[in-house]
Length: 196
Image 1 (spheres, helix red, strand yellow):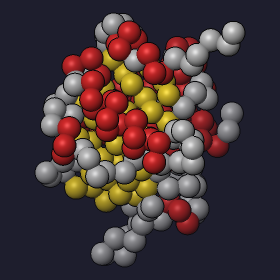
Image 2 (image 1 turned 60 degrees about the vertical axis):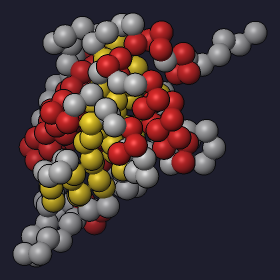
Image 3 (image 1 turned 45 degrees about the vertical axis):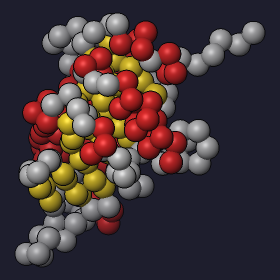
């Protein structure tokens, strides 16, 4: 168990399916499973894991409504605040606030936005795609993707991931989560071609 897994273990224990999801090294992941499976917790743990790495993480959470996006955002904040961090965290964890304290800076309006050192997490509604353009993210979670216009994925999320690394989606992790297994049929781009 590495340091990130150990830190998360103090906050949350994944079941076998969630563990398999978290250990999967694929850059694009789809969770197509039923209610109460723990998609929100699994994705929150994936985001927290990205935030615990040294390189700056820019995370974008998109859902059909802002209220839905807030659910995952709030779970990320809960997990992060509950973590038992070492007494002297590495410098990339330190954020100096106006009062000289270190910690997480959260803005709740007009949409949830968190800054922790060089890391950022933002939650947005995907109903109005043009409001997402111009943002930058290397880690994107699209919740209830089947209820969003397909253009959110093809014209906004995928280009963001492409711009976040060198080459085609290098260094990026895109997560599409949904409770409807029909999502897999609209995400043919996430399936690698079968070798001949």
